[in-house]
Structure formats: structure tokens, C-alpha cells
Image (cartoon, rainbow, N blue to C red; front, side):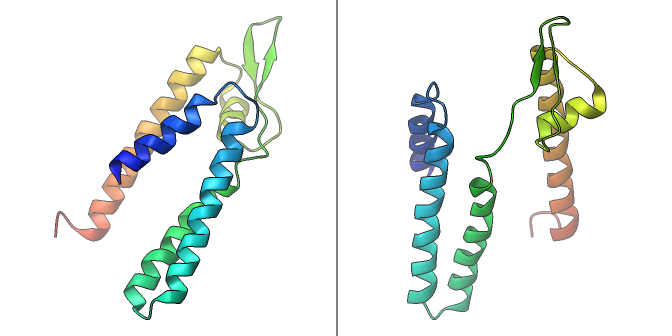
Length: 132
């Protein structure tokens, strides 16, 4: 599975320069995985197995919502990015914290992501116990 994940991400990144291709590939792969999960749910009578595939389908919905996002606007007078009314994380962050350079925005968003990961790990271990 680890090699498959590496292959899929590298395959998508190879086509990074073509507009819409990365998102399109993500939608196609997510749809194929969804069809596989639905077939596996129908073929099994084991409720635990069905639940695992249903959970996988739920995770895929996050990949199917990505085609309609807008990038922040670049203001040539200030050299900074400003947020658009679209509700992507980048635009939301820029609307709350104000215009930023691309480098500054990237660093800020990576910090937010790291803090979010730490919070999720903490929440997971508090709710499930430590290595039960």
C-alpha cells in the first residue's frame, strides 16, 4: 500500500503544469476507489468489512469537492496576496489576517497545519487512550 500511495502522488505531480489535470486525476481516482468500495460492500455479508468500506467512501468526499476553488488575488502595487470571497482555507486565512507575501503565507499555513495535526493527535489519544 505504501508504494501505491507514493506512485499515485508522483503520477499526479508529474502533470502539475497542466491546468485542471491534477484535480481531474484526483476526481477520477477517487471515483474509481468509490466504485470499488461500493462493490465490496455489496459482495460482503460481514458488517465490520462493510463498515470499513463505508468509512473509506466517507473519506473520499473530501477529494471530490476540490474542483471549484479560486486562488488569492495578487496586488501588483503592494506585492502581496489578498483573499477572495471564496471559502478556501487560503482565502479565509488572508481575509482574517490580512494580505501577505507568498512566502509568508506559506509559512503561516504550514504552522496552522502543524498545530492542527498536533491537536488531532492529542484529541485522538485523549479519546481512545494511550496505545490500548
